[in-house]
Amino acid sequence: MDYEGQKLCENLFYWMIILFGAVGWVYGYIEQDFVYVFYAWGVGMILSIIICVPDWPWFNRHPVKWLDSVPDRRAVPVTGTNTGTGDAISK
Image 1 (cartoon, one colour):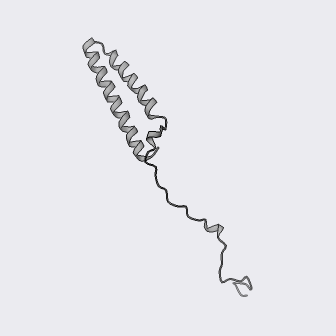
Image 2 (tube, helix red, strand yellow; image 1 turned 180 degrees about the vertical axis):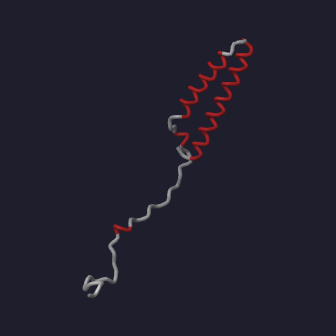
Image 3 (spheres, helix red, strand yellow; image 1 turned 60 degrees about the horizontal axis):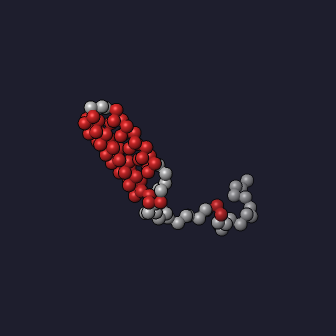
């Protein structure tokens, strides 16, 4: 999931929970039973989990362009001025 997909997913989750909770609250107020708020909220939560948790293709529409990898320094042979003759410390 790319960054734009994360933003979309968060907004979908937020607005679905708010919408289902508000509809449940209005219906519960009309019916004078608070349990309908929890039913609507539960349905909204389940639907938002189904929509937001899997990595659906519409969350990957803006892929991140990664930088090229840096070559490993240990893999490159070292070419230096040390020829390997003589000691570095003289006695």
